[in-house]
Length: 221
Length: 223
Image (cartoon, rainbow over all chains, first blue to last red; front, side, top):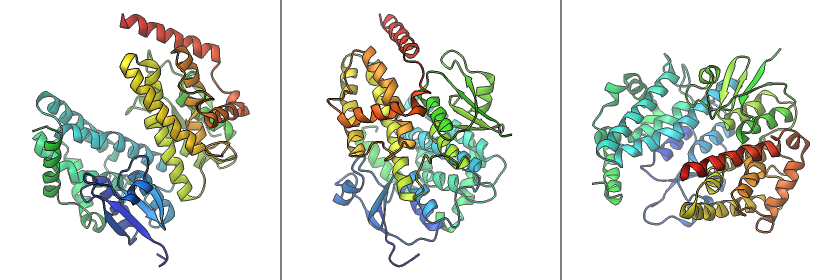
């Protein structure tokens, strides 16, 4: 990367969306700086200026220009630094990847949140929905090693970061993904062996502690 | 010869977007009108098993679902004709941001404003006004969201230009007016004046009658 290119990631260590972007940057071999945002305590002026509509992380600033929304950031990274390409080469393959990225964004994190935010019957229903979603994703992967086929690709990047919170869902939901969706669990383990994922995969125990604090804030306990 | 089919509904702004895009690119297609509120055809369920919704574009037998995904597919596959998205990655990121904002925030809130009542409606009206102010600001001194000519953001904003105007009148509301939002008002006029758009909108009286019937049914159900 040319030395006059500057990348700054406005970050929250526990955010699975930040993790997603970090994995994408690592896949491209890009170096960047991070600025940790205290999203609960007080957001920085830079964050508020860069993402005035949502004031959320992650935000990637490329030579000072902000790109917001993590999936958008991954598209941007893939298009700006095309090698190695994360999206498939053909239009149809791209449309499949975009479809599943959209499905993942609409379903996975919210379904997971419903697990740790609820109790009793609501929790059981949330758990069932979450497992159904993982089964649909297993169907999308088919008998390949990755959502990208034989290679780790765009959809794998979009999804693997979110799995840093799956331990939280397992603990509060009282289930194991290995048992319910073994193919999915195998895919997680396969991805975690990649450098880009291993170096950026937030420790699930730390995430679990963080969510414990969120639960208290939400009055779930 | 390439075969293009579009599963949609005559009155849907979502399949409407795809029709505008295909016409803009000069792509010939077969339109299959699905009566989605009453029935989901076996073909639709086959092509969109995950969401079971329209629009679905089927190109040479292969289905593409979700209107924003379909629009990008059309732009990449048929390079002849005007571009829906810019080429520059940063500009593309901005387009994707605004189309998501429209789809996830604006359209659902504006829709809810027309169909809710009482306090819920008051709250939705306030939210709609804030969202429209943001869009007004985004237009700034441009003719279209896409600049001098229509682009993907304009096409995705189609609901606001036509469907919402009909709905708000039926609901007895004046959320979006030229006085409150002069730039959006001008955009609506310019957008609806584009040949591709005005020749492909669902007929106003048919759409009005359809929505009026739905309002009456909703009112009757509420009693």
